[in-house]
Amino acid sequence: MPRSDGSTLRQDLIQLQKMTGKASKELAPAIIPFNCMNAYNSFLKLRRASLGDPITYTEIKAYLEVTGAVLTSTEIHAILVWDITNINKVSELRQKQQQTSLEGQ
Image (tube, rainbow, N blue to C red; front, side, top):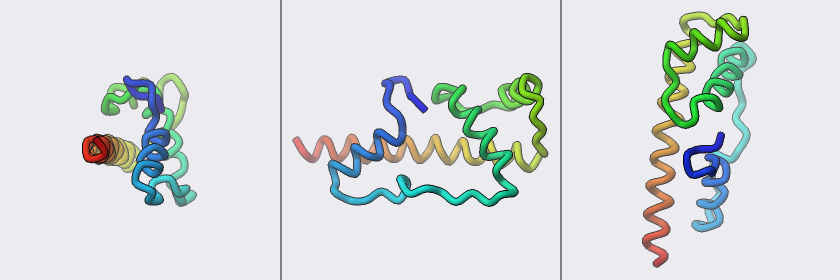
């Protein structure tokens, strides 16, 4: 998912891995349980469409209306938790990347 600077999280992780020489566990493929796939796929679509902003209930409602998808309240909660986790992780990785860049100068 491109962010405001045009980079993706994956690109940032690869760059961080090149800079530090350490393998990033975030680049390893995640194993999503089958019963979570509907919610996870919806999360990915909503995350791509949000352009870096947090996913809101309004966006989820619009997504459900437009696509005809059905999500339980538990799945909606999971999407919001995944989103906050993602936003926090991206922020953390960017801070590490900036720190690494400053140390290299």
